[in-house]
Length: 88
Image 1 (cartoon, rainbow, N blue to C red):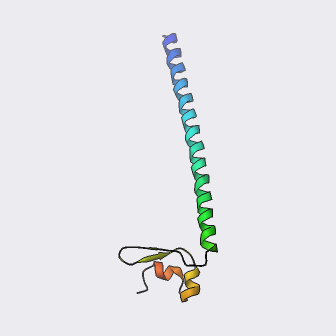
Image 2 (cartoon, rainbow, N blue to C red):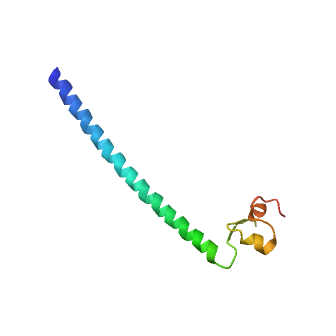
Image 3 (tube, rainbow, N blue to C red):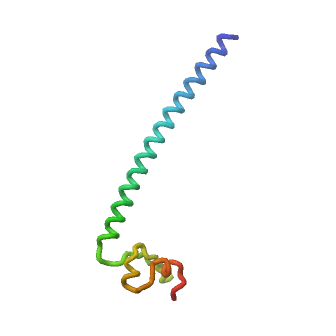
């Protein structure tokens, strides 16, 4: 009986160790992905802030989302007014 309990305990320990390794790997991958996303965001932000034009996304229904504040310098209205769809 004691031998069976010891074997079961050893098996459970092995499963836990494998799970810890799997979780460590997932955490490492998540950190790499997070860092890549931060770098991508920073690159986009730099591009947004340095190009001379207004950056926007247009939709099939002719609505537009503006991604930078330069629209306010151009029109006098902040991007939030355009993005809220209050302006017609």
